Length: 91
Image 1 (cartoon, rainbow, N blue to C red):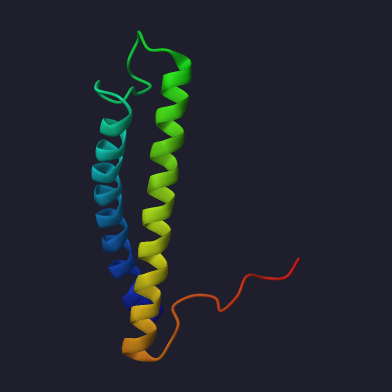
Image 2: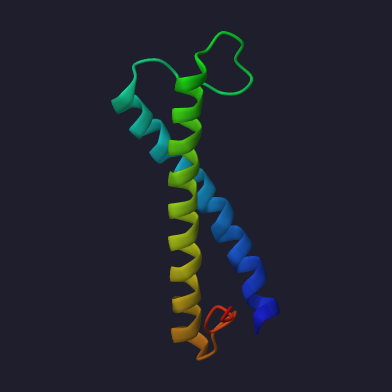
């Protein structure tokens, strides 16, 4: 069953990346009127670049994590099997 879930998870991960990019654009628009700085830009303050990268990364991880977890719960409801580990390994 896990082999069937893998391509679904990949497709949903790509969709989550696209959604998080849109969300970041909206959030950054509330912070600054200019386009969000990227590493490819030459003349940008490092503080502004760091802030943009931190916000973008946080939004991406949140959207991707919630999408992955939600799709796994949906898969379990549909098939009765959890695609992955039940719990993290204890240290």
